[in-house]
Length: 419
Ligand code: EPU
Image (cartoon, rainbow, N blue to C red; front, side, top):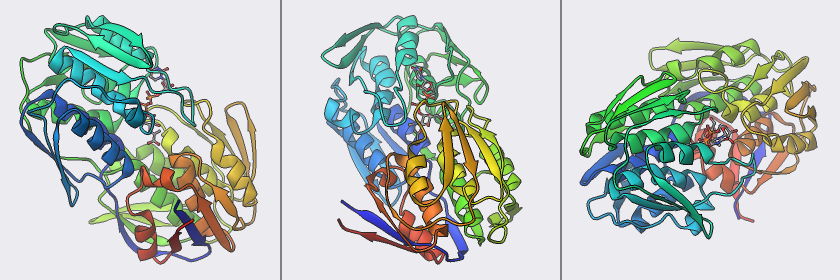
């Protein structure tokens, strides 16, 4: 099992190119189920989760070709086959095949994802929405089976804003008979990216980017050639890295309108972030000068839960106390125990983390527990005194493309080592 060995303390410089967004790419891949023909998706990051989704589609009979960031999915000879437990258990986003499968074939079978490290993460809203659209849902031997001759338009209210839930229902509604309304829809840029792609395929989705999305169903959709948006969380992670290492770097290929909350909050910590012609210039304050800041995670356009762990790592060396409130997932503080092993002073009570800034962190052997927790350990390790060995980095490989290459290129001391 690979590990990452990081020696902290180096100042970074140069530029880094942000990859395509994993959480935009996954629903786009699922959307290829909706039509026959060859869909081409560009700027697809080379990640474990992308490969798992490709396997889910291949298992259903899709032709897959992934080369140099370009993914072609030919869904012409797709058959009505399930998303099996072996794949779903490694990636919950496989559940995104549920909506498009039932829309195209009138039947879908997907292994019910269990809980995961960061929370219980039920899919009741995905199922409620499909039921409203006329699907009959049954649970059998750990699988969800959804059946409907043809889905019909419905008015769906989500009492919690759900990203993949909104995406699943939007894809299902694209081929339904009549008009579907999703109220309290998720507004994340990844949802918007999917809606834009669906519209290019011939769907009729309006209200994109708002919490009220209307989808007028059509008879069929056409394959497209589409470029995935850059990863806003990877961007935020690199801003944090520059901030904690007192570095000056240029972040290329990012969309500033997707990271307003991240930029505003990280500026509060003393990081200077300015737009330049070819990217975002990020300059961290001198060592020992990071300011504390309070943050609450919220659905978009609020501060993303996927940046909470990196924010805690950053503020763990600030000059005062920061209060962090996690409101999206109930167990998303697993990184805290590992950061404490590096000398951080963080207390957790319920969903609130009190981060008392320390002068410096020290390298230590630590364990990655989930994707963003791993990213926070990388952020911390790059600033820590001495060596940090991060174990279980397969979590990191699920969501960060070539992270050690990108950090090395900036001058960081980071190496992948075998077990
Ligand atoms: N929820 C329900 N019922 C549902 C669906 C969600 O109660 O049917 C709850 C969840 O338990 C959670 C809240 O609603 O408390 C929001 O969850 P959401 O459904 O929005 O999360 P998701 O769609 O499962 C996506 C991202 C996550 C990201 C969250 C929140 C993808 C593939 N995953 O998950 O990404 O944290 O939205 O923004 O898009 C990551 O990349 O590290 C990651 C975990």
